[in-house]
Image 1 (cartoon, rainbow, N blue to C red):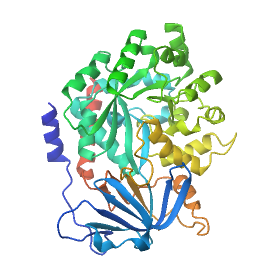
Image 2: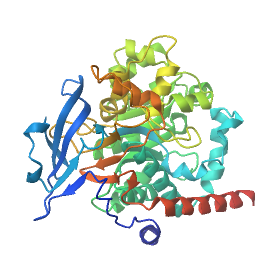
Image 3: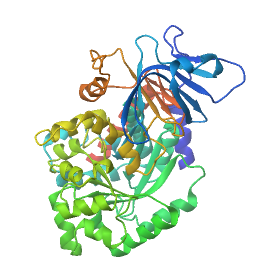
Length: 475
């Protein structure tokens, strides 16, 4: 089955190699013997955090990349373009702003086909939405999941996202989608799923046996909700996590109803239940985390549990407001990141609008600084998902880079004496797409076009599959 799906992807979706218009290209190949060395040359503005987590804006710098790893970040005048196999001229035609690739700490890629299937304007609560979703998801095949995930991932990539934590109930469709798009993917599989009740921790062991090395995605363990598990399942999750060094993620206290249900079924709240089985560690990622007490927040922070804030999803589903400032006051802000959720919770799959929504949501108490929002999408997220080699533009880090056109609506005008104003413009303008995107030293988006997937064909396939799904739901 998997081979057939991969064959279909290759035939219908793989992009035809294209040559950039010579008058508009920023990419220059120097010819000669093929090498891996790449120079991103003369970047007008480069935003990153340094080794001490201090936010920096470097002006007129260049990045040297070899074998997918950043080797040096140096003043542009020290770089000799003719010495490199491939040169990206970032200073041409108004210039480029470069940031680390953004990290999406919570998403549901196979749900992409459900866009418009469950209308966001119907005013459903999160509990009503959760009750309806399994019917739609169970009507989908592995092929549907795969193409759906490709649609989701490519949209994320066009929005500057290079790494995603996927939370779903099936492994292989997400792995195939990650392969097709060359995306960095944490593939967290629910072992107590709403849509796949047959799932159990044994599924993780089965996947580990059948994995083809090297996999594009990184296997992890998920629980849709903690109350769906019991102590036996949680202890087996902990055993798997320890044996195979796996990340564990779950929705935590997403609604008041869910929080109460855990207490009524198990006699414990979610934080206590996870803690009793050794699952409150830096290898755990808890999404939403709205209905948590002050003492639970302190315990989560002390345990270095990663927290994913999803303000748009929370607002749309009337779930409640994440207690951001309580996490900040407990010194847990460095473990708070952002996620897009799925298309039934946030139709536009980008993090910049999620960052702006975070600023708006919490504005009445205090102001979330733009630098803090930048960290939530980069360094905090890398820490949350245990990928310390991503989220910064420094020597030794993976070459995951987002290239944003400077001479563009939303960026201009800015204060040239204070380039940090560009960061505020990037976050507040919204609707922005990257000009280019690099993942592990390879351009995945080039001149605003996806270099791996034919998007026109993809959209046609997705529309056809969406209507077929609707017909199945009516029968």
